[in-house]
Amino acid sequence: MMLSALRMRVLGVNSTDYSSSIPSIGELNTEGDRVLVARGGQGGSYHSEFLPSKGQTRQIRLDLKLIADLGLVGFPNAGKSSLLTALSHAKPQIASYAFTTLRPEIGKVMYEDHKQISVADLPGLIEGAHMNRGMGHQFLKHVERTRQLLFVVDVCGFQLASKTPFRSAFEAVQLLIKELELYKEDLPCKPAVLVVNKMDLPDAEDKLTELQEQLLNPHEFSHLLPDDMVPKNNMVFRHVVPISAATGFGIAHLKTCIRQSLDKDASMATESLHCDRLQALRGAVPAKNTLTWGPTASV
Ligand SMILES: Nc1nc2c(ncn2[C@@H]2O[C@H](COP(=O)(O)OP(=O)(O)O)[C@@H](O)[C@H]2O)c(=O)[nH]1
Ligand SMILES: [Mg+2]
Image 1: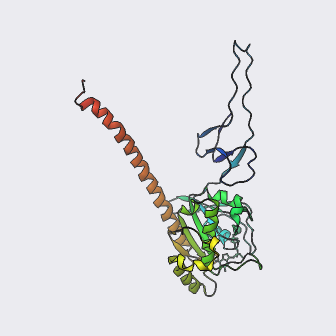
Image 2: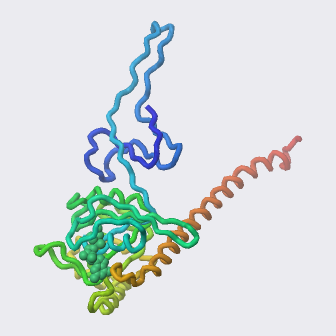
Image 3: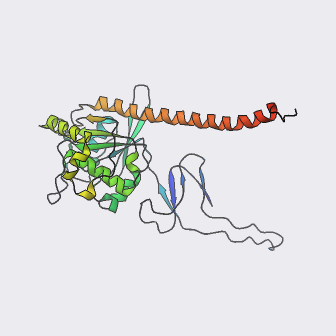
C-alpha cells in the first residue's frame, strides 16, 4: 500500500506516545512524497491458477503534522495567545489561568509585501513536559516541526500553582530550553527569538535589564536552578524583543525581527542549494572534459 499525502508522519503499530523513539515508517512532507507501508501480493498467473497471493497487512497510525514557520514556546500565562492575536487575525482563547489553549492554533502574520508567515500557538509547556507531564509530548511534537521558535516569557516571572516554585523570566527561559533539550537534544539548535512580554507591568524595565544581564552570562547564574535543570548548551537568541501584547508596544519591531530571522534562513537555504547544484555540476563536468580534451581522447 502506497500512501501519498501532505504533512504526515507514518508510525508503526502501538505507537501511543509521541516521542522521537517511536518507529517511524516515513514522512510525507511535500506534495508527491510517497511511503511504502505494506507490499501488495503477487497477481494471479498461469502458474498459480490465476489466484493472486495475499499482500502484507500492517496496522499503522497516521500522525498529522502541524507545520508552521514559527512555534510559540512558553509556560502557561506568558501571553502566547495574546501575542498571536496581536500579530495576526487569529482568535485564540485568552485567560489568566493555565491551559486555556488546548489545541494548536495557527495565525498568519501579514507583511506589506504580501508575504505571510504562519505562527502556531501551542498548548502550554510546563516543567516535566519531556516526561509527558501536562500536555507534554503533544506539545513537543509540534515544536519539532516548526522552522523557528518564538520563546515567550512574562517579564515578571511565572508560577504555575501555589505549590510549585516561582520562576523568574531568566529561569523560565532556562527551563524552557531544558525541556526542549530533554525531549530531543538538537531542538534547542533551532533558530529562536525571545519575546519578553508584559512590559506594561510595574518594574518591567528593571526586570528586563536584569534578564538581559543574565542572558549575557547564563553560566554565572546557573546556581539559580537545580543542577539537573540547567541546559547543557545555551541558546543564542537572534533577537530579544520586549513587548506588551496587551498595549501593542513592540509588536511592529517584533514583526520586523521575525521576518529578518526567517529571511536569513531562507537565503542561507537558497545559497546552500546553489552550492550543491554547483558541486554536482562540477562533479559531472570534469568527467566529460577528460573524454573530450584529455590525452586519450580519440574523438
Ligand atoms: N499586563 C499584561 N497582561 C497580559 C499581557 N499579555 C497577556 N496578558 C494576560 O496574561 C494572561 C494570559 O494570557 P494568554 O495569552 O492566555 O497566555 P498563554 O497561556 O501564554 O496563551 C491573560 O490574562 C492576559 O490578558 C501583557 O502584555 N500585559
Ligand atoms: Mg494560550
